[in-house]
Image (cartoon, rainbow over the protein chains, first blue to last red):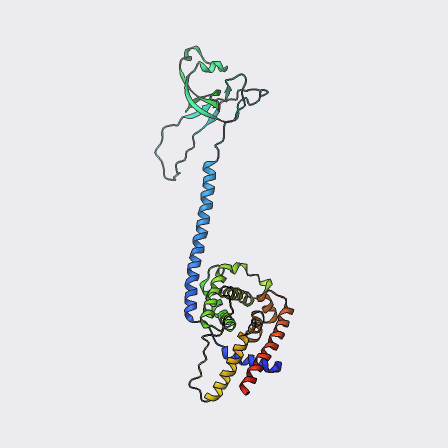
Length: 177
Length: 173
């Protein structure tokens, strides 16, 4: 047979099969599968977004809290007494434009700088800040002036305790209107 | 479609499924397998549509490639090439019944001859002579050079000529 006859025969088969299509049920099954696939795809994306959000949140929560500046980490450090630092507790209540009733005046916290309690400071790795009440006379031990009449008064102080349990430094806290 | 547009997917399916279905049907001779392969091809498209690269070929070639891989897997699983089954042409109600039967007989002979070709030669005939694929599309679908498509097609036609000549010779004896 010549190639022309072959092409003619193939063309006859092509024409005979022209118009053949898959059963409409195939389309219905595929569209159903497409919807499920889309739903799964959306669910997967939401899961990934939630996982990412959870990871970020965990990173924020698990992040080590900023430690107070190491006290006397090296022997060459000169300790200095910084002037009292005024700190004010953050007001985290939602603000409102509505007029408010007058509130009692708040007390502002005033703290001194840290004073070292050890002559030779071992290396500082981590520590805790513990608020305690101490006699005002303690202030004299770090060179702060206290009048004789108030030596027995109690004052608040923050003691920095190092990783080995030694009190490394102290600062005194007062309150002012 | 990639953004989950169902209408776009339906439109793509309606436009492309006849070619995919006929390709599978002419490769296997089985209506049931052709429908299965058509369905699996578009299911696979949902999963791998992002891999489609327009610079490497047309959507048609991409779909032929998926269908071909599915067919090869079926051939491999069954351990044999599939034969003709379930392809029925309805000639009832025709005015020229004898003529139609003769024509149908001829078409069946051609179909059987195509199905008896080795797979590598059958697929180029199905794609290029029975389908709408250009040589370039066939080359992309079969993952081979265009020159290979041409040479296989030429060889396939020669094999068909021999097979059909043998059938005709046997009928005239």
